[in-house]
Length: 254
Image (cartoon, rainbow, N blue to C red; front, side, top):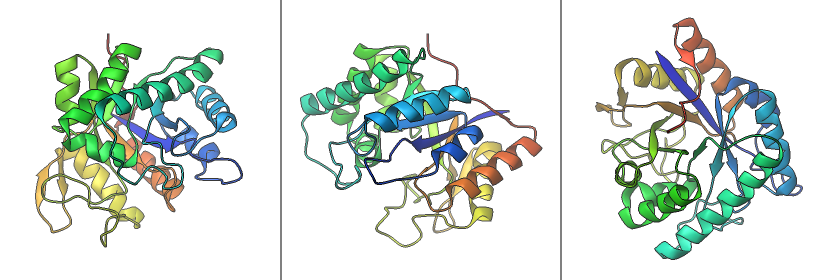
């Protein structure tokens, strides 16, 4: 069995430090790097990409709504053309630093409110994925299985990696519990490990109300800004390795 562990990184901006990229990077197989719209300034992009290359971690773009003040977690009413332009702009920024360092982008994963909206809105999903397709059709797209992002990727002809979360609880319809609700964030390392093992070994997840639903995943996300991100990542990686499950980034789509 093989699974990818991805982590949202490079989200520090100016004097504001977010996450612990230096300690997390050696533990993951792919990194979703902020592109400047919710976090990540030029220096942070450069440093995070170099860190990923040092540990042979797959480099992914993590585009968002233009929402630095809200960390990209506030929904914005942008039309499809605006979404396309914003995503393309961010891909170009990250690709410039990656190529200058001798690397290549591997995947794209929308961030925050853009991710949640695109999972259920076909217009926004297609706007994002058209930007990806015309930028580089070999890039993988990370998102929820069966979502509008997944459907759009299949329609447009992009590789898609089904993503599940280690540090977030689920609702019976397969959506993430909104951050505004109690229990949205998993704070217990044992529960986080149990959730990941269940997803990887059985293709199911237990929702917040105890319902067991299907949850197929090629990649497991841990939020780099989470309070327990380092503890969770260490424990999840060790547990999966002990079970003989290989941790590596998905192959690129040709």
